[in-house]
Image (tube, rainbow, N blue to C red):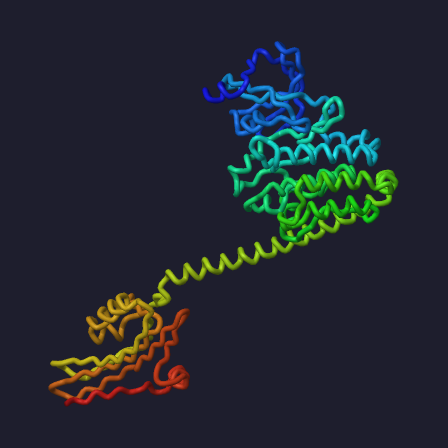
Amino acid sequence: MSSLGTSFVQIKFDDLQFFENCGGGSFGSVYRAKWISQDKEVAVKKLLKIEKEAEILSVLSHRNIIQFYGVILEPPNYGIVTEYASLGSLYDYINSNRSEEMDMDHIMTWATDVAKGMHYLHMEAPVKVIHRDLKSRNVVIAADGVLKICDFGASRFHNHTTHMSLVGTFPWMAPEVIQSLPVSETCDTYSYGVVLWEMLTREVPFKGLEGLQVAWLVVEKNERLTIPSSCPRSFAELLHQCWEADPKKRPSFKQIISILESMSNDTNLPDQCNSFLHNKAEWRCEIEATLERLKKLERDLSFKEQELKERERRLKMWEQKLTEQSNTPLLLPLAARMSEESYFESKTEESNSAEMSCQITATSNGEGHGMNQSLQAMMLMGFGDIFSMNKAGAVLHSGMQINMQAKQNSSKTTSKRRGKKVNMALGFSDFDLSEGDDDDDDDEDEDGDEDNDVDNNSE
């Protein structure tokens, strides 16, 4: 802050008498005030800290640029002090009843004022400046009726900037500024075209549309403000040139000043322009129709966006489900069931050996460990344990098929064993428990038919 004190005129906070709030500028509020020691009416822009704006204003001096007086550097009071434009902003004038007084001479004079001020910033100032936020609110009317460009809060020295962040107000912003692309001084040319359109139509640009809606229409749909069909051709051509999508095709302010001078020499233009200005009721409907079309276009877009968002939400939901399933073992544990009717009878009085034959076919999706444990548990059981278990705790996994046969040997007598051959097929959701080779065997069992015999002969 010490460097600021040596660079700028410091104005004491107590040397200012504040009055009403005149509105908000970039990054701060603007107040009308009196500079007591100088007996001068001034505008004070209060800031949280002194930004680049003070540095820019301090090197500027032009009839169409607001005059800079000094800064306030008394924490927590910071501010920029400039001349006060008693007739308010161009925006307020255009949107008041006073604008009904405007004629071609009025428009030509003010259009030239703004163009000369911008030409000074781009080409004649000690350091070239890109304003980046040129709009009717940032153009004020001095007591003598001269237009002055103000509010340099978004401005940058040209040699310091090739790529700029998103600043400004969407209806006045060039497409490249909206997209935060590298910019040149012709981004101000685009904004100037919007200000000229405001003076000609005395309408609010893109009225009723939100800023982001305007940004989408300008960038994605290449939409521009409506130029009424009865607008004088020379003005319409100038507007089209200012709004070229390619910044290189837009005219410089030196060229714009030359175009305005040529228009002033056109003897037919005053009548055409005044007729246009006084018959606003006839062409205003064109602007309103375009606004309705743009609003509908935006609504359709919003509806499509909602559809896409809903579709995206559903896709994400299914993706999440698939992810959860991929992390969950696909072999679901199922309890093996054995028929309660499975039994055996033996006439042997003594057994000296036993043999169990088990044929297993198994498939598993990475669940071999659990399946092996189940099989080992079954292998440790005896005949009686296997054939008498009811809803056993042994857990088998999907994809496992088991065919079990039991054979008992006797050393003394011939034994006959009656039992049932068990076939189990386990699936994901259920399993099929069949007795014998097919379903017909089940029917026969239910009717009391003889069970399948398994003969165990002594060896």
